[in-house]
Amino acid sequence: MPETNMPAPPQYGTRLGHWFFYIILRWFGPAPAYVLLIFVVAYYVFVLRQPRQQASYYLRRRFERDGSLKRLFRTYGYIYHFGQCLIDQAAMGILGRKHFHIDFPNRGDLYELSKTKKGLVLLSSHVGNWQTAMAVVDDMAIPVNFILRLDPRSAERYFFNLSGEAKYINIIDPTSFLGGLVEATQRLHNGECVSIMGDRAWGSRTEAVEFLGAPAFFPVTPYRLVSSTEADLVILLTARTGKLAFRIDYFHFSCNDLDCRSKNRAEISAILLNKYVKILEDYVQQYPYMWFNFFDFWSMDKNQSEAETL
Amino acid sequence: MSLENELKQLIIDELKLEDFTVDDIKNNETLFGEGLGLDSLDAVELVVILKKHYKIDLEDMEKAREAFASIDSLAAYIREHSEVK
Image 1 (tube, rainbow over the protein chains, first blue to last red):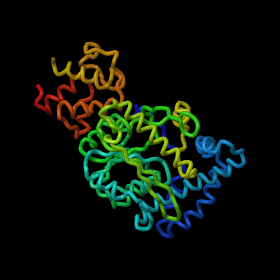
Image 2: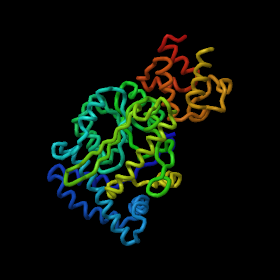
Image 3: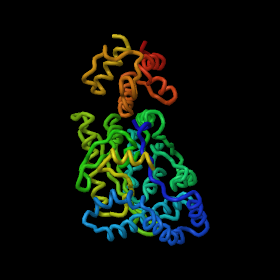
Image 4: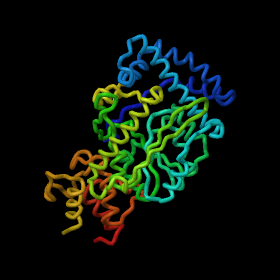
């Protein structure tokens, strides 16, 4: 169960370091923060071993032919992109969304879908600046419930605590009663939106699906929520396309499209999970430095035992 | 059939507990974790059962936590929040 077996996400930076970036962002904007990041990332990649190890789970699958030197420099680029997205994420909360250009062609589709009040599972991933995708909540006609654990040291706290722009946000703590799924299911019954990550198991049930050449373990919770409540599923993937510029891609699946009545819940879940993983795999082919997940998806037992020691 | 037994049968059917019969589940047995061994995904189905069969919404999570402790507590919750006696 999630509350007894939840891996801790990796953490980068000290409280002082976060505060320093915060001051730079507030006084000078993101540009000098990106410059400072060059040196910070060099320290993390070339001095510390743990960030290289955590990045290697993904990079060795995505770039399997790399030699050790090439992988080292690729790791630098990868973690630099990650740092840029963390800065953007914090900047969005601190400076406001008006400083960002968000290209979201399906904005109207999402709004119309939310108006049906059938219940909506919004599936996000650790890609690009995923909080950018979550900024679409202002475009929705229903409350949005995020299943996530807000770390007081993380950059995303700025997004959720300081932006103040979204009116209908509720946080469901995955460490709460039964992983927050009782509340999430009820919210879907109420016709609301539940937002959840598709690429972080949090110790809940997983299924192995072929991903980057080998079976990887993905959580089944989002798809079980959909199949049990007959809510719609929307997958949002964000990519950083330039300085303070993002693009959001949108994929919608409904029970009508899937002919839910002729399938059982397990079949529907499996279909949706496979569709999600295919979409994610296409994404990492197109944007190889934008999937920021530092767990070993291909070896969940090992992943969890390592996480417990972090 | 008593409400307790009806609940057990619904849980067996909806959660696909194929090796269980109504008699295998004790009224005071813990549903989640130790006891019957249900997990958080099974809780999703349980919320759906309450909505679909008893028209019950679970707005108060503290009360839901108490209700989901056992068959006895679940039946008591249903009696309190629906027309079923």
